[in-house]
Image (cartoon, rainbow, N blue to C red; front, side, top):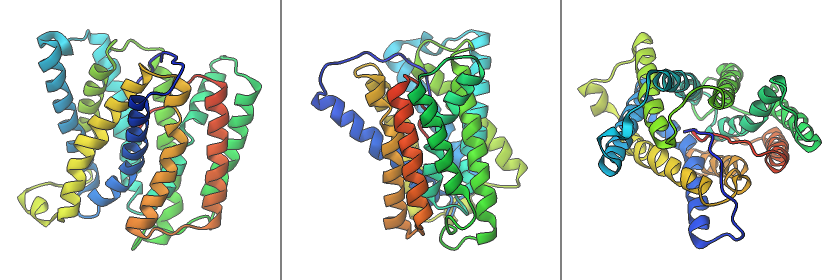
Length: 317
């Protein structure tokens, strides 16, 4: 999930910081595989919608338990902003990603998503925010890498998927990622709750609502028979996505933002895709071609230049 938070600088990396970093790397790097496993036997949008509903309710319960009944109190403008961000980031961004992973290998999806800081920086530039030359070079390099990844012949389909659908859904991941970047950019310009966990809980709830409504409009359904027909792997993957992917991953990231430098916390942006590609290759036997390695390396190089040159905040899945 997502929030723009100012991080505090620290002089050394403690054991706790390393543990939180590794947690974010592994958890957020594994969510792409998690989505693929869930939607293998479950309706894609409804399963993700219920995922965020459940995660949002759990987070709201924990906040209320530890901070009191007023923990979730926000004004109407903050609530409207949370609705906008939840619908855009989770409803549209994660919705596109989830539908796309029926055809696009999860590792490739992760590499396309890795370009998020590039699009955020482009929106900032359009808005008149000046950047260092190294940042602008990073944008150019990153865009070249994205182009290589999405070029025809750059990758094969997910195992058992229709090859003719791959390019279209790769582009849809790209569109969803740009929308996610716009939401990240707008977070600094609209009224939002001060507590990032409160914002996240509302985003999850509204995002889950948007995904669920869209799922039903697509004639998806979840009933006792649907749940019975879900494989055990899909069921456990869904539980993992709720508790670990949504709650633990974001909790570790927020902790990092408040206990280490933003540049160090942002390193997940170019570690997660590597983990996602490896997990897709090992667990799902996803196809990996040389343009993926080349384009992925170029994208991650561009992101590294941007992260080192600018203190921007990226968002996790």
